[in-house]
Image 1 (tube, rainbow, N blue to C red):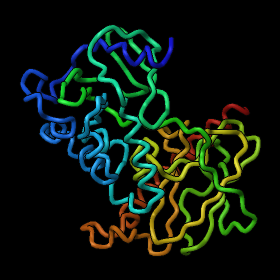
Image 2: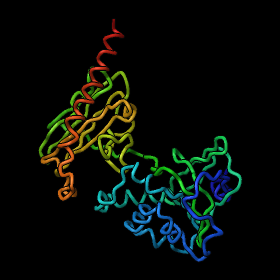
Image 3: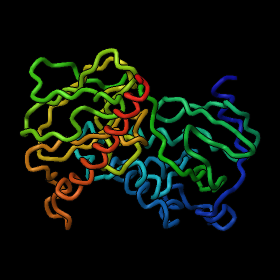
Image 4: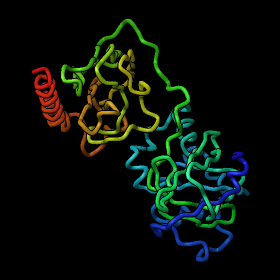
Length: 315
């Protein structure tokens, strides 16, 4: 079905929440940004729109369809606006936000078929699935639908949508690795789960023909099980990986293997003092100080368990 036609096909949603007041309760002169600003649960979305100068755009004539992640969705994705302060980082954030917008159509409640697609404002494709009356866009579920505004319509979703990676930004392998990290004998842990380096040094992650595919994906904190939007990323998990990253400032960098993230396959790189410049005045100070002992214990236990599993298979 032609994309332009699919844009005109509206969505049937089973309303699962009332985070937005429904359309009849709004004055029709409220724009999408006005409506989102008044919910109390979309402060992160409005702040992000303002951060990259998209709020004025979505307050314009439209029409627009906006899939609005809640504040909790932003928290779960590890998005912190303090991390977006360069032009490149702001462009990444802008691309993420535009992936939540259909421009030129106010798609309201009507028939939608499983597998329907629409073009987002960043030109990527949104794909809808319908299962037992529940509508999803990627991994995000629509929890409240058909909230009208003067310039379009809003649907609330419970997760942040991340644009598909056309070509993962993979840094070219370098020969001067200051630290090299591989895969441990168990296959379920990195062979060095915590390393300390100086600012300006390079860490390389390398393995060849491993039994299982692995990768390196930045996470917001050691307890997170989701890849950080716009973070360091080696690409899709693979049996052979040669990836490097040079760290240019004090920080503690947390990462994980996506296929085995729930098994605790994670690591950390402590750079310089380990304290991010943005966290110097934070109450908890150096995040690595509190997290590292427990982190090392947990990853060691996982590695031992994996080794026992490998030995039992061999026997």
